[in-house]
Structures are given as C-alpha cells and as structure tokens.
Length: 500
Image (cartoon, rainbow, N blue to C red):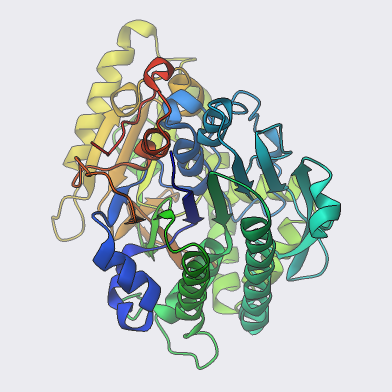
C-alpha cells in the first residue's frame, strides 16, 4: 500500500441528518459527491459496543461475543465492568495491519482499554469514568508506547461528560463541556496525525451519541415531544458542524490520503408508544404474574410523579448512589419482580437494556421447559408475535426469529436470549403488566434512539465498490485490510470486503 489510509469513526453519525443539513455541512457535502457509498447497516442489537467491536474485528456479535447496552438504570456502568475483551486483543484490523508490517496510529477505540503492543501508536480512554460533579467526569488514559506521553504532553486522565441525565436546566452547560471534550480529543489526535509516521490512522469520537440521546426531542421536529428551545435546539446540528470542520482539517492536512468516514449506526427518535411483551405472554398463558400487584401500583405512581414533576435527574442521581438501588429500580421499572418465574415458560429479556427500543428478545425458562418441548414452544411464540396487532389493527412485529437464525456463532447462546425480534420503528418494547399498550416514561431523559442505517463515506479510494446496496459494518475490517493488501482468507471473518 503506497498511500496513507485515514479512518474516522464517529459514534451515531446519522446519514439523514447529514442529508437534511448538507448545505450547512460543506465537508460532508463534498464527501457525498466524491464517495461511491453513503449507507451501511449496523448489527443486532443496534448499539455502540457490539457495533464497534464488529467494525474492529469483522465478526458479527455471535462470533465476537461482546455485548453491552448502556442503561439509564446503570449510570455507574457496573455491568460494563464485567465485560471481557481479552479475546479481542490482537484480532482487530489494526492488529492485522501491524502484523503485516504497517505502521498504525490508533486513537480512542471504544472499550479497547488498556492499550496493547502495536506496530506504531495506540492511545485509549478508560470506559469507566469517575464523577467530578453532577455533569462532569474524568477518564484514565493508556498509551503504547509509554514514551509518547512525554513527547506529546498526553495527560494521565482527561475530563469528560457524565453519561447520566444532567437535568434540563444543565443540558446546555453539559453539552458545551461535551464539545470541549471533542475538541480535546481532536487536538491530541491531530498532533499524532502530524507528528507520527504511520500507514493507517484511526480515530474514534464518542460524544455525538450521548448528545443526541439527551437532546433529540429539541432537535427533531418529528419527535412526538418536540419543543423549540433557543439554547438546546441548535446543539445537535452544531455538533455536526463541529465534526464537519474536524474532518475537513484532517483532509486538508493530507489531501492525497485515502479516507473512510464511518459510523456504527445512525440516530432517530426513540419510540414513545410501547408494546408490553410480558403482558402478551401472560395473556397467552406463557407467563404467570403475582395476583397482588402492589409493586405494579407503586411503579405506576412513582413513574407518574417523576414524569409530572420533572424529577428524572434526581431519581437517576439517587439510583446511582447504590448498587442495590440500581438493582431494585431495574426490577421495579421492568416489572420483573411481579413475574412468578418458577411458573412461567417465557418472559421478556433485558439483554438489550430496559428501554423502549424497537428490538428485544424473549427468554425460555429452561427450568420448566424440557428440551423435547423447547422447539415447539419457540415456534409457537414466534407465531404469536407475528399475530400481534396495534390498536388500529396494524401489524407491530417487523420480524421474529430464533437467535441462531439471526447470528449462528460461537457466543450466540451466551449473549442472546432464545428468541429475537424487532418491532415497527414507531413502537418500542414495554415492560408493564396489566395492559398490552403503554407509553415510554424515559423520553424526557433519552429521547434519541439508534437507527440501523449508518454512514460510510469514501475519498480517494481507487478501488471499485462491488456491493453498494448491502454493505454491513461487519464488512469494514476486511475492507480496510483489503485496501492495505492484507490477506484475510485464513481469518474466516463474517464480513467481506466491499472492494473489487
């Protein structure tokens, strides 16, 4: 490979926001004109960690096994600390490029902490942050080799923004600190970009995702709770303009380099209408609930009080103070404490987080369902899901499948529930018992959700794209390595190069 390859990853960069505002985004607009691609598809579930690990490795989640979904009820990321990425080290696109003799510079790859030996430079930020105050945190920095810390003045830790909900009154200040963090990331990356010798440069920016989660209802006029706010409405587009400027600076510094600009998924409004899957299972005698529904009554009262009085930020702060409060708040919100599991054959899984996303899964209770009746029960539930109808008779389930029919891999049984499904885009998974249709209670806290369509823009790539209409983010690692003339045939990756 004679030309340098630059890969810029931006979490949750949405293709349709770019299209709608391309007149205000000159770099993106020019890239769209030059690129032979624009869209790719994310993985299932559509979430940051499984998606980026698929981008890094070329494996779908069933074969890389790294699944974690950020949860409003776990602001301290206690479940994230349980993730093991030891089997990913040495198996990313930058590792294979290093082994092939290429010099690499890899900055801030999400979750890939601490750094490890590469042929070049690797800098990563800890996924675990420490609270500084109500809106700010700090993260440790890891570098390989250590000596680059002194060379570039890299600190041992950096300031960041808290992933929890800061409250509407502090959203503008919180977002401003997020912009400062992006610029700090860029400034460090740009010093490495200009100061190191490399063949492949990769930089990842994380902040757009959480900014869109918190502020989407002020930005998207189609959001059911949209309300114009002089301070808050411009913020998301300002972040897109910021990244437009950042990408432009990378390009202007090395105009002849090959560029790939990509995201792991897009962004859209999180559904407000919910479909209570556990209630549907109960109605079909597959789930049994406690008759005395004191917890359900308490849940309804508390959620109504919190929503009506705008107490979300206070509730989240209280939850974050204790592991037990986190645990029991999850049980209350998901109604799991009402399920008699010893008498239930199936229930809604929490694998995709306790939130109103369109995707979800159903667990089969292996304690009471025999291996002999398992297949028949799974088929029965899938058929039942397809018969679900909305209040106006509309079909609600986009698809429902056995987990092995979605991803048949080494880790499929370990990370996925028995049945996986996806609802129509304007419906989310609900957790109530007692009624089939409900309403999301977390839209003020997180109005933005993930869209499967992701961005893939190419510049100066002098290779034909052979598969423009069915590109997956799983194809990114083999495509990057193909551009670098690295043979991947022995790796048995799930993804395939998109280039001829």
